[in-house]
Image (cartoon, rainbow, N blue to C red):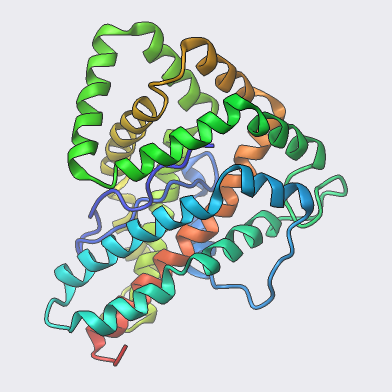
Length: 313
C-alpha cells in the first residue's frame, strides 16, 4: 500500500489547494465526473459494517496509525488555510471545527464506506468493492514478514516526512539514487507504474481542489457568482504543477520508505502490485481514500467559506 500525502501544495488561484493521494479514474478525462462526486461527498448517515477480511486487511495496514498521520497533516494544512485566508479570526474556534473535520473515527468510517461505495459484484467480499479472492490474496501478502515490514516502513516514512527537513533530505537522497543506482531507480519506476501513482495523484489532487472550491462556494466565500466553468478552468490550470509536485514527493517518499528493502524484496512487492489481486486491491483502496480526501477537502472549504462570510464557527 502506498499513499502519497494529501496536502502537498498551495496551488489554487486563491491561492489554496490540496493534493490528494488518491485516485479516481486513471485518465484525466474523468476529472469532471469525479469532481462532481467529490463536491457531493458527505459523511455517511449509516455506518457500513466491514466484512472479516476487510477488517483484517485494515488491521494489517495499521490503518489507525495512518489516519493519525493524515489527521496531523490535515490540521497543519487547515492552520495554513486560516493564516492565508482569514488570519484575523481567532484560532480557537477554527481549530475546534477542524478537529471535528479531521476526526479519526469519522475518517475510518469513510474508508469503510468507500470500500462499499461501488458494490454490486456478486463475488465481492461483503461490504467491499473488491472480490473476496483478491482481498484474501492481499491479506495473505500483507500478513507475511515482508508485507508487515513494508507497512511499517511506509508509515514510519510518512510520519518522518511531516518534518520539512526530512522531506528536503529525502528529495536529495532520491536525486542521488537517480544518478548512482540505476537498478534501484528502475524498481521504483516499475512500482510507480504498476500502481499508477502519478496519474492517480494528479487526478486525485485536481478532484480535491474541486471539492475544496465547491466547499468555499457552498460556504458563501464569494459575494459574486462563480460558474462551474470558472471553477473547472481554475482546477485544470493546476495540472502541470500538481504533476510536478506529485512526482517529486512520491519518488522521494518511496526511496525513503523502501531503503531497508533489498532489490529482491522490492521486486516481490512490484510483482504483487502487478498481479490481478494487487491491482484490484489498489483500486479499491484508492476509491476508499478518495472519499476521505474529497470529503475532508469539501468540508475544509465550506468551513473556510463560512469564516470568510463572517459566520460563527
